[in-house]
Amino acid sequence: MGIKSKAAAAVLVLLLFLGSLWLQGGLDYHWDSCLKGYNQVNKLSNSSGVDGAGGPQVLEGCPGQTFQVSLLLSHLLAAPAYTSDVLLQPYLSSWDELVKFMDALGSMVGLISKEIESKTSIIRQLAILAEENPEAELGPDVHSINSEAGTKTSLELSQHKGAYHSVRSMIWVELNRGIVNFHQQTDSGCRTLLRLHRALLWLKLFLEKLAETPVAGRLRSPSELCREAYQSSLANHHTWFVRRAAELAFIAMPERSFFFRLVCVQSQEELSVMLSRVVQAIEEVYDRTQKALEENGMLDLP
Image (cartoon, rainbow, N blue to C red):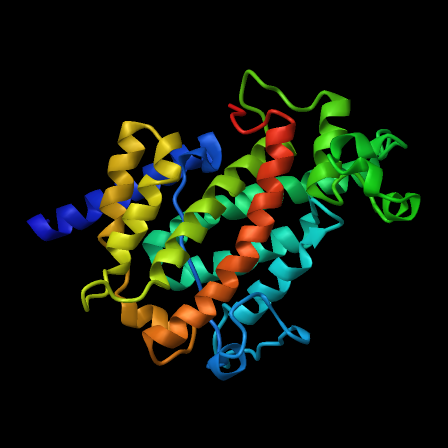
Protein backbone atom coordinates (compact mmCIF):
# COMPACT_ATOMS: atom_id res chain seq x y z
CA MET A 1 0.00 0.00 0.00
CA GLY A 2 1.41 3.39 -0.97
CA ILE A 3 1.92 6.35 1.34
CA LYS A 4 -1.15 8.18 -0.02
CA SER A 5 -3.35 5.11 0.38
CA LYS A 6 -2.14 4.62 3.94
CA ALA A 7 -2.86 8.28 4.74
CA ALA A 8 -6.36 8.06 3.30
CA ALA A 9 -7.05 4.88 5.26
CA ALA A 10 -5.76 6.50 8.45
CA VAL A 11 -8.07 9.50 7.98
CA LEU A 12 -11.08 7.22 7.44
CA VAL A 13 -10.28 5.17 10.56
CA LEU A 14 -9.84 8.36 12.57
CA LEU A 15 -13.19 9.73 11.42
CA LEU A 16 -14.95 6.46 12.19
CA PHE A 17 -13.41 6.43 15.66
CA LEU A 18 -14.39 10.06 16.17
CA GLY A 19 -17.96 9.19 15.20
CA SER A 20 -18.00 6.45 17.82
CA LEU A 21 -16.77 8.89 20.48
CA TRP A 22 -19.57 11.28 19.60
CA LEU A 23 -22.03 8.37 19.73
CA GLN A 24 -20.96 7.50 23.26
CA GLY A 25 -20.72 11.06 24.52
CA GLY A 26 -23.49 12.55 22.42
CA LEU A 27 -23.30 15.80 20.54
CA ASP A 28 -21.23 16.85 23.49
CA TYR A 29 -18.58 15.47 21.17
CA HIS A 30 -19.89 16.85 17.96
CA TRP A 31 -19.44 19.01 14.99
CA ASP A 32 -22.00 19.99 12.39
CA SER A 33 -22.77 22.06 9.30
CA CYS A 34 -25.30 23.74 6.99
CA LEU A 35 -27.92 24.12 3.85
CA LYS A 36 -29.75 23.90 0.19
CA GLY A 37 -32.84 25.22 -1.89
CA TYR A 38 -34.16 26.87 -5.08
CA ASN A 39 -33.37 30.25 -6.67
CA GLN A 40 -36.08 31.96 -4.59
CA VAL A 41 -34.05 35.04 -3.73
CA ASN A 42 -36.34 37.37 -5.63
CA LYS A 43 -39.06 36.36 -3.20
CA LEU A 44 -36.79 37.01 -0.25
CA SER A 45 -35.20 40.29 -1.28
CA ASN A 46 -38.16 42.37 -0.10
CA SER A 47 -37.89 41.03 3.44
CA SER A 48 -34.89 41.12 5.75
CA GLY A 49 -36.56 39.07 8.48
CA VAL A 50 -38.27 35.75 8.89
CA ASP A 51 -41.66 37.21 8.10
CA GLY A 52 -42.59 39.75 5.50
CA ALA A 53 -45.27 42.39 5.86
CA GLY A 54 -47.94 39.86 4.92
CA GLY A 55 -46.61 37.05 7.11
CA PRO A 56 -44.21 34.21 6.32
CA GLN A 57 -43.26 34.04 2.64
CA VAL A 58 -43.44 30.66 0.92
CA LEU A 59 -40.31 29.30 -0.75
CA GLU A 60 -40.40 26.96 -3.70
CA GLY A 61 -38.65 23.63 -3.72
CA CYS A 62 -35.36 23.05 -5.47
CA PRO A 63 -35.86 20.42 -8.20
CA GLY A 64 -33.68 17.33 -8.17
CA GLN A 65 -32.25 17.81 -4.68
CA THR A 66 -32.83 15.82 -1.51
CA PHE A 67 -32.20 18.69 0.88
CA GLN A 68 -34.71 21.53 0.66
CA VAL A 69 -34.09 24.85 2.38
CA SER A 70 -37.80 25.61 1.98
CA LEU A 71 -38.70 22.60 4.14
CA LEU A 72 -36.05 23.47 6.71
CA LEU A 73 -37.42 26.99 7.05
CA SER A 74 -41.03 25.81 7.29
CA HIS A 75 -40.14 23.40 10.12
CA LEU A 76 -38.16 26.08 11.97
CA LEU A 77 -41.02 28.57 11.70
CA ALA A 78 -43.51 25.96 12.98
CA ALA A 79 -41.44 25.08 16.06
CA PRO A 80 -41.97 28.13 18.35
CA ALA A 81 -45.15 27.81 20.46
CA TYR A 82 -46.90 29.98 23.06
CA THR A 83 -44.61 32.59 24.59
CA SER A 84 -41.47 30.55 25.26
CA ASP A 85 -41.89 26.93 24.18
CA VAL A 86 -40.69 24.84 21.23
CA LEU A 87 -42.71 22.03 19.67
CA LEU A 88 -40.60 18.90 19.38
CA GLN A 89 -42.10 17.48 16.18
CA PRO A 90 -41.11 20.40 13.90
CA TYR A 91 -37.85 20.80 15.86
CA LEU A 92 -36.85 17.22 15.07
CA SER A 93 -38.10 17.60 11.49
CA SER A 94 -35.70 20.55 11.16
CA TRP A 95 -32.87 18.22 12.12
CA ASP A 96 -34.09 15.66 9.57
CA GLU A 97 -33.57 18.28 6.88
CA LEU A 98 -30.17 19.27 8.27
CA VAL A 99 -29.10 15.63 8.16
CA LYS A 100 -29.86 15.66 4.43
CA PHE A 101 -27.79 18.80 4.15
CA MET A 102 -24.82 17.22 5.87
CA ASP A 103 -25.08 14.12 3.72
CA ALA A 104 -24.81 16.42 0.68
CA LEU A 105 -21.44 17.69 1.93
CA GLY A 106 -19.81 14.31 1.42
CA SER A 107 -19.01 11.08 3.23
CA MET A 108 -16.81 12.63 5.92
CA VAL A 109 -19.54 14.97 7.14
CA GLY A 110 -22.10 12.24 6.46
CA LEU A 111 -20.52 10.22 9.26
CA ILE A 112 -21.59 12.95 11.68
CA SER A 113 -25.16 13.01 10.36
CA LYS A 114 -25.58 9.43 11.54
CA GLU A 115 -24.87 10.56 15.08
CA ILE A 116 -27.49 13.28 14.85
CA GLU A 117 -30.00 10.76 13.55
CA SER A 118 -29.30 8.62 16.61
CA LYS A 119 -30.08 11.60 18.86
CA THR A 120 -33.35 12.49 17.17
CA SER A 121 -34.30 8.81 17.26
CA ILE A 122 -33.79 8.71 21.03
CA ILE A 123 -36.27 11.54 21.60
CA ARG A 124 -38.79 10.06 19.16
CA GLN A 125 -38.56 6.65 20.84
CA LEU A 126 -39.07 8.22 24.26
CA ALA A 127 -42.17 9.95 22.91
CA ILE A 128 -43.56 6.63 21.67
CA LEU A 129 -42.89 4.95 25.01
CA ALA A 130 -44.55 7.82 26.84
CA GLU A 131 -47.68 7.42 24.71
CA GLU A 132 -47.76 3.71 25.52
CA ASN A 133 -47.29 4.41 29.23
CA PRO A 134 -48.98 7.77 29.96
CA GLU A 135 -48.62 7.50 33.74
CA ALA A 136 -47.06 10.94 34.01
CA GLU A 137 -49.00 12.92 31.46
CA LEU A 138 -48.93 16.66 31.90
CA GLY A 139 -50.56 17.64 35.16
CA PRO A 140 -52.46 20.81 36.00
CA ASP A 141 -49.23 22.40 37.21
CA VAL A 142 -47.44 22.00 33.86
CA HIS A 143 -47.28 25.78 33.82
CA SER A 144 -44.69 25.56 36.59
CA ILE A 145 -42.02 25.02 33.94
CA ASN A 146 -42.99 28.19 32.12
CA SER A 147 -41.72 31.53 33.32
CA GLU A 148 -44.76 33.16 31.74
CA ALA A 149 -47.19 30.82 33.53
CA GLY A 150 -49.59 33.60 34.31
CA THR A 151 -50.13 34.38 30.65
CA LYS A 152 -51.07 30.82 29.65
CA THR A 153 -54.76 29.97 29.50
CA SER A 154 -56.39 26.63 30.29
CA LEU A 155 -57.12 26.29 26.57
CA GLU A 156 -53.44 26.59 25.74
CA LEU A 157 -52.57 23.99 28.37
CA SER A 158 -55.18 21.57 27.05
CA GLN A 159 -53.63 21.78 23.59
CA HIS A 160 -50.59 19.80 24.77
CA LYS A 161 -50.85 16.33 23.24
CA GLY A 162 -48.45 14.41 25.44
CA ALA A 163 -45.32 14.25 27.52
CA TYR A 164 -42.99 14.89 24.58
CA HIS A 165 -45.17 17.42 22.83
CA SER A 166 -42.74 20.26 23.44
CA VAL A 167 -39.39 21.11 25.02
CA ARG A 168 -40.97 22.35 28.23
CA SER A 169 -43.43 19.46 28.54
CA MET A 170 -40.52 17.02 28.09
CA ILE A 171 -38.48 18.79 30.77
CA TRP A 172 -41.40 18.77 33.22
CA VAL A 173 -42.26 15.10 32.65
CA GLU A 174 -38.67 13.84 32.80
CA LEU A 175 -38.01 15.75 36.01
CA ASN A 176 -41.30 14.48 37.43
CA ARG A 177 -40.39 10.88 36.56
CA GLY A 178 -36.81 11.20 37.80
CA ILE A 179 -35.42 10.40 34.34
CA VAL A 180 -32.90 13.25 34.26
CA ASN A 181 -29.59 12.50 35.97
CA PHE A 182 -27.48 15.56 36.83
CA HIS A 183 -24.40 13.50 37.75
CA GLN A 184 -23.92 10.81 35.09
CA GLN A 185 -24.68 10.20 31.44
CA THR A 186 -28.11 8.86 30.50
CA ASP A 187 -30.26 8.72 27.39
CA SER A 188 -32.84 11.11 28.78
CA GLY A 189 -34.60 13.38 26.31
CA CYS A 190 -33.26 16.44 28.11
CA ARG A 191 -29.62 15.36 27.87
CA THR A 192 -30.11 14.37 24.24
CA LEU A 193 -31.74 17.71 23.47
CA LEU A 194 -28.80 19.54 25.04
CA ARG A 195 -26.40 17.85 22.60
CA LEU A 196 -28.57 18.82 19.63
CA HIS A 197 -28.88 22.32 21.08
CA ARG A 198 -25.11 22.76 21.20
CA ALA A 199 -24.77 21.56 17.62
CA LEU A 200 -27.46 24.00 16.53
CA LEU A 201 -25.41 26.89 17.94
CA TRP A 202 -22.43 25.86 15.82
CA LEU A 203 -24.67 25.68 12.79
CA LYS A 204 -26.14 29.12 13.48
CA LEU A 205 -22.71 30.70 13.88
CA PHE A 206 -21.41 29.05 10.72
CA LEU A 207 -24.37 30.21 8.64
CA GLU A 208 -24.03 33.73 10.01
CA LYS A 209 -20.40 33.80 8.97
CA LEU A 210 -21.15 32.27 5.58
CA ALA A 211 -23.64 35.09 4.99
CA GLU A 212 -21.06 37.80 5.76
CA THR A 213 -20.05 40.33 3.11
CA PRO A 214 -16.44 40.36 1.87
CA VAL A 215 -13.77 41.73 4.22
CA ALA A 216 -11.27 43.90 2.34
CA GLY A 217 -12.64 42.46 -0.89
CA ARG A 218 -12.01 38.88 0.22
CA LEU A 219 -14.51 36.19 1.13
CA ARG A 220 -13.10 33.81 3.70
CA SER A 221 -13.26 30.10 2.94
CA PRO A 222 -16.06 27.96 4.42
CA SER A 223 -13.35 25.85 6.06
CA GLU A 224 -12.00 28.89 7.92
CA LEU A 225 -15.51 30.04 8.89
CA CYS A 226 -16.59 26.62 10.13
CA ARG A 227 -13.42 26.28 12.19
CA GLU A 228 -14.04 29.70 13.74
CA ALA A 229 -17.66 28.84 14.53
CA TYR A 230 -16.56 25.55 16.06
CA GLN A 231 -13.98 27.20 18.29
CA SER A 232 -16.67 29.56 19.61
CA SER A 233 -19.16 26.81 20.40
CA LEU A 234 -18.67 23.04 20.37
CA ALA A 235 -14.93 23.15 21.04
CA ASN A 236 -15.76 24.31 24.57
CA HIS A 237 -17.37 20.91 25.25
CA HIS A 238 -14.84 18.64 23.52
CA THR A 239 -11.69 16.88 24.62
CA TRP A 240 -8.30 17.80 23.16
CA PHE A 241 -8.36 14.74 20.91
CA VAL A 242 -11.81 15.50 19.48
CA ARG A 243 -10.81 19.13 18.82
CA ARG A 244 -7.74 17.98 16.88
CA ALA A 245 -9.80 15.47 14.88
CA ALA A 246 -12.35 18.17 14.08
CA GLU A 247 -9.59 20.41 12.76
CA LEU A 248 -8.57 17.59 10.42
CA ALA A 249 -12.14 17.22 9.20
CA PHE A 250 -12.32 20.92 8.28
CA ILE A 251 -9.79 20.27 5.53
CA ALA A 252 -12.50 18.46 3.56
CA MET A 253 -14.99 21.34 3.78
CA PRO A 254 -16.25 22.28 0.26
CA GLU A 255 -15.46 25.63 -1.33
CA ARG A 256 -17.96 28.51 -1.33
CA SER A 257 -19.16 27.79 -4.86
CA PHE A 258 -20.47 24.46 -3.58
CA PHE A 259 -22.76 26.28 -1.13
CA PHE A 260 -24.08 28.49 -3.91
CA ARG A 261 -25.17 25.36 -5.76
CA LEU A 262 -26.46 23.79 -2.56
CA VAL A 263 -29.01 26.57 -1.98
CA CYS A 264 -29.50 27.29 -5.71
CA VAL A 265 -28.24 30.88 -5.72
CA GLN A 266 -25.94 32.75 -8.08
CA SER A 267 -24.02 35.14 -5.86
CA GLN A 268 -22.86 35.94 -2.36
CA GLU A 269 -25.56 38.61 -2.09
CA GLU A 270 -28.29 36.07 -2.82
CA LEU A 271 -26.70 33.57 -0.44
CA SER A 272 -26.64 36.20 2.31
CA VAL A 273 -30.35 36.93 1.91
CA MET A 274 -31.25 33.26 2.05
CA LEU A 275 -29.03 32.34 4.97
CA SER A 276 -29.97 35.42 7.00
CA ARG A 277 -33.59 34.33 6.91
CA VAL A 278 -32.71 30.80 8.00
CA VAL A 279 -30.40 32.07 10.75
CA GLN A 280 -33.13 34.29 12.18
CA ALA A 281 -35.51 31.32 12.34
CA ILE A 282 -32.84 29.15 13.98
CA GLU A 283 -32.08 31.88 16.50
CA GLU A 284 -35.70 32.02 17.69
CA VAL A 285 -35.76 28.25 18.27
CA TYR A 286 -32.31 28.27 19.86
CA ASP A 287 -33.07 31.12 22.27
CA ARG A 288 -36.31 29.50 23.48
CA THR A 289 -34.57 26.16 24.03
CA GLN A 290 -31.67 27.85 25.78
CA LYS A 291 -34.05 29.61 28.16
CA ALA A 292 -35.95 26.42 29.02
CA LEU A 293 -32.76 24.46 29.69
CA GLU A 294 -31.21 27.28 31.70
CA GLU A 295 -34.28 27.75 33.90
CA ASN A 296 -34.10 24.09 34.86
CA GLY A 297 -30.33 23.95 35.40
CA MET A 298 -29.71 21.68 32.39
CA LEU A 299 -27.01 23.48 30.44
CA ASP A 300 -24.27 21.26 31.90
CA LEU A 301 -25.88 17.82 31.98
CA PRO A 302 -23.10 15.18 31.80
